[in-house]
Length: 191
Image (cartoon, rainbow, N blue to C red; front, side, top):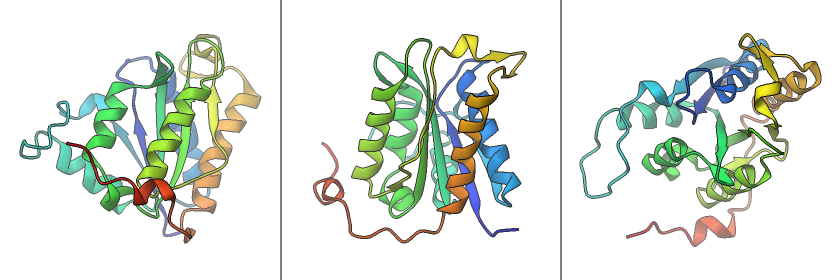
């Protein structure tokens, strides 16, 4: 057993979400490597659009605490209009360096069409700006509706690739990244 906690954040609000199915697969693989896992389902949290002038609304404190105490995080999002979902953006906006700096982050993206490379690239850029250590290994589920049946993967090779992400997150959960990224030095927050 490890003393590793892996939090998975699901950026899909859809009930029959392939992102959630894939994230559960990755978290199950992390658990099989001895990690404690926690699925943060954004459908279940009250997270209004981020307003830096407002007091922390709704469930923002719960979200940030769960991410902060994790040793590693998996971000899972459907691809919308070439990027990641707005619920994921809102969740990340509530977080910051306190939650992500020096933390291992694994990326998982799902698309209804071709490979969701831009969603993965955008998530990677944002995480680097927060000084997270983003795994080089990432997982993607293209053509999502044809990849699952009855809430499970129908493609064993793809299921293995997603599971490998969960294993890698545990493997590298306690890496000590160095040096700081250029992006984080330039990230003072917006007005």
